[in-house]
Structures are given as C-alpha cells and as structure tokens.
Image 1 (tube, rainbow, N blue to C red):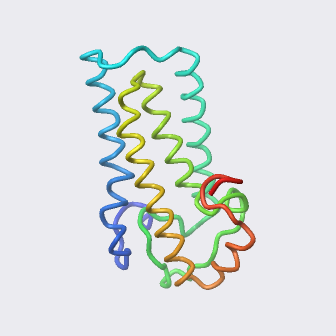
Image 2: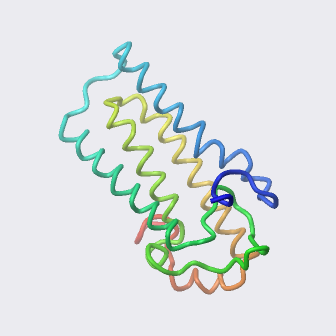
Length: 167
C-alpha cells in the first residue's frame, strides 16, 4: 500500500508532474468542467444509452485496474525501479495482453467520466489527460526497457502497450 500511495524515493524526474496530472489534476478538471457544463449548459445532452455504456465501461475498466494491481505487486503511483523490493517483470493477468493495463483503464475511465456526467465539453480535458497517459506510457516503457532486467524480452512477447492490435 505504501508503494501505491504516492511519490516514492527514486521516482523518475519526468514522472513527477505527469503522475500528478493524470491521476489527480486532470480528472479533477474533467469533473469541474462537467459541473460547469451542467450549470451553464455549454453542450447538448448525452443520450441515456451512451451514458449507460460509458458507466459500464467506467466500471469494467475499474475492474481491469484492480486486476492489474492484484497481479503486479510492483504496481506503483510513480515510475521507479523498485530494486529494494526485488522488482521483476509482471507477466500474468492483463499483463499478458498489454504492457500497461492500468493506463488503459485510466484512459477509458477518464473518457467515460465526461460522458457519464453528461458533458461533451468535458471530453476536451479528458483528451488532454489521455495525451498525458500516452506520453507517460511511452516514457515508462523506455525507462523499463533500459532499467528492468527481462523487460525487453517481455516486449517481444507482449507487443502492445495500451490497446491490442493498435499500440
């Protein structure tokens, strides 16, 4: 739990701002924009079926994130090599499908949040958060390939970072 709670010693410098943005600031902005949208009526209604679908996606990808945490004891809020804990490559569960299932879950959840809250305009900050996840994924993947023994071999087995067949 301590590892997953926040900034840890040894966190990659580039991740200090990115992790705070994608996990806290970005999602807060999405919710604030959605609230302002509801108050001032900036965008049109979101169909109830789309809200329901977005809610189901939000829940499903929440379970994906929980599954990733359960199978990867090195799942952390920040990017760092956990040498003090015998860091090794997680290959089970969702890590057999994509290399960063927690980020996949975060991306879908942030996009779904805007729609669940019935705000088309909140998709703008959601897309910015998604961009942060994409940058973070690329940087983390590069970091792990350079620093975590066995990760480069794992990338030849599990080729996709976020979405099977895409990237």
